[in-house]
Length: 314
Length: 314
Image (tube, rainbow over all chains, first blue to last red):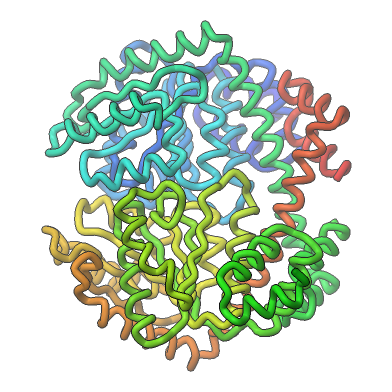
C-alpha cells in the first residue's frame, strides 16, 4: 500500500491502517518521518490526559469507565498505556482483558500499549510520537497510562495537559510514596475503590497535602481530590466534570499549546538518546569497543575516561 | 586535602572523606577518575544485594533489620538507596528517619541515597559507581534499594549478585504487578508484614508462580519465597541464611565475577548516555539548536530528521 493511501485510510478510522501508521512512526524511518510530518501538521487539538498510579490502584478500570463516558458523548478516545503491569499490556490477567475487549469492536476507541521496556529512550520516544499520531488522526481524548515512578513516566507526563493521580485507600505509606514521586504534580487526585475502608481518611490526607501546598500543580491550578469507585461506576461523572474544568483553566491560561511544544521537545530529546543508545550497543560489539570494555571491566581504565573515548567514536 | 590523603582517610573509614570520594566519583571529573581507578583495582569482593519492591512494602524497615544482623556479625554494610519514596531519601517521614538515625554514629554503616531523578543517565551512573566505591573501600555487604519499576531500577539491578523482591500481603493485583515488572527476576521473594491478614495466601501465590516457572531467576537458581515481619523482627535469621545460600550458589557457579563485569559495562553505557544528555541540553540552548527545536514544535521538521541533524552537531 502506498503511504498516501495508508494515511488516508488511517484518517478514515481504519484500525489496521492506524496500527501500521503507529509502527512506522514509532521506529525511525523515512516513511515514518513522512507520515509524522503530515500528522504533526494536523495535531495539537486533542486533550491529552495523563493517568498515573501504582499497580493495584485500579487505573485501568478507571480508564475503562472514562472511555465509556466519552464514547457516550461520541468523542473519539485513544489510550497509550506505558504501564508494564497494565491489563492493556501483555501481562494482563484474563479478567481485565475481557473487561477491555468490549472496546475492541468500537471504531471510536484505539488502545496502544507498550509492554517492553528494554530500551531507555525507545519507549518514551514511541509513546510521545504515538500521542502525535492519535492527535493528528483526530482523536479527541488521549489517555496516557503510566505507573508514575520511572524516568519514562516523567518524560511522558510532560505531554499531558491534565494529570490524574490514582490511589487506593490504605496505608499512610501511600501518601509518603505520592509525596516523593512524580505524583505530587497531579492536577486531580482520585481515591479509587471508595467503597473500601480508609477511603475517607486517604481523601482527607490528600486534601491536607493540597491545602498545605505539598501537592502543587505545575500551572497554578489548585489540585482537586475526590473519591470514586471505578468498579461500581460511582463518582465518574464528577471526575469527568473536573477534568473539563481543568481543560478550560489550561485553555484560558494559554497553556494548551505550550504543553504540545513541551511534548515535541521531549520527543526530540528522547529520540536522540535512543539513537545514541543503539549506536553504543553497535560500538561495544565492534573490536575497538569491546577491547575498551575489557579495560573497564578489569579496572585498567576508569569509566569516565572510557566513556569519553567511546563518545569520540560515535 | 590532596587526593591521596582523601583516599587514605576514606579507606580508614572516615565518613566525611567517604562522602567526598563519592561526590567526586559520581560526577565526571579528572579527580573522580583517579579515585575511581584506585578503587576499581580494589573492588570486586563485596556482596551486592538488590532489594526491590513497591512503596509501602516495607523495604526500608527490612533493610534496617539486615543492617542490624550484619553489624552483629561485624560486617561492614553500605546502603545505596535509589527509591525516591525511601525514608533514606529526603522525602522521609519523621518516624522512618529516626529509625535509621541509630546507624548514623556507627562507622561500619554508610548510607547513600539518591533522591533526585531529573536526569536520565545520571542516577544509574552515580549509583553504579557508588557501588564500586563502597566495594573498593572494603564494605562487605552493599544493599541496593530500588522501587523496581523504572529503567533506572533495571540498570541498577544488573549490579546485584542477589535480588530480593519485597512484597506485602494484600490484593492479588500485587502478583500481577510482580509478573509484569522487573520483579519476576528475584532470587528471593519476601512477603513482609507477615502478621497481616493474607500473608499466607500471598506466600502461596508466590510459591505457585515459582513452581510454575513464571518467576525465574537469571541464573538457574530456583527462587525461594518466605514470610517475614521486618517490624517485629521475625524471620530475618531465615532470610539471612537464604541470602548466604544464594551467594554460595553464585560463587560455585562462577557468577560472582560475571556480575561485577556486567555492572561495569552498565556503568559505562549509563555514563555515555549521561554525557550525551548534557550535550543535548547545551546544544538545544544554542542558536542552531533552538531554531531546530522551533521547527519541530511547529511541525515543519519531523522529529526523526531533527534528531539526526542534532546528532551530527554532537
